[in-house]
Length: 274
Image: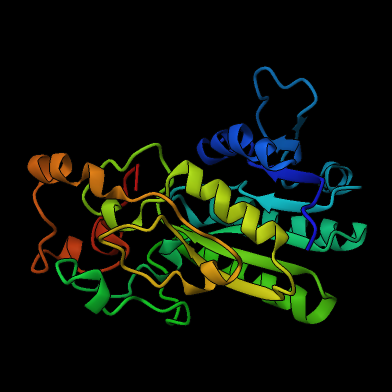
């Protein structure tokens, strides 16, 4: 598929959106920015809420594809998650359908499968049983539940309306991992841009779900569906392992906070970052 020229980036003022604003133009994209808060230095950015259907439809009009990062990116009350992540994502898909946009890249999350038991982190990568992409969804938070909804919504819009989506179950996309758990889930910003580019340009994706991380030595999940899009991760969190393990210790399989993919979100009230 030819690279889309104009891409709507929702959530452009957020942490991941800010990273992608700096990286994606190098792939030839002209970004149209959308967020509920003003973006400093971007006078042409659209400042609106996902609940503003008129502004949203105007934002998607004429774009070739959408990267949907907007919404609440941490656990919150169900009412707030419902409005921003569930109703807001529905509003975006409806606007895209009405305006004839054919491809969306949806920021899903590892928390859609958070209660999945994590694989043995000490086993060599070539002998480790990685978490497959078709593992049953087991959300660990209202936030994770909203991402499960988003994946089902994407499947519905593909089956019903022919609107393609790549749902990316993002691990943790920061400049560097900040805890030992992230050593397995970290996606470098550079690899994030590579994955989004692959998701925008791969042919015949229908609705494809992929895990989003770098090629980490301590990887927990199977990146084969992401690689099938043309994604070639180039980074590895292992360069940060010695420092983080010295500070925090190794993950302990007997610790309930370490037993599942979602970490302490499966046992304790959530905190940020995750």
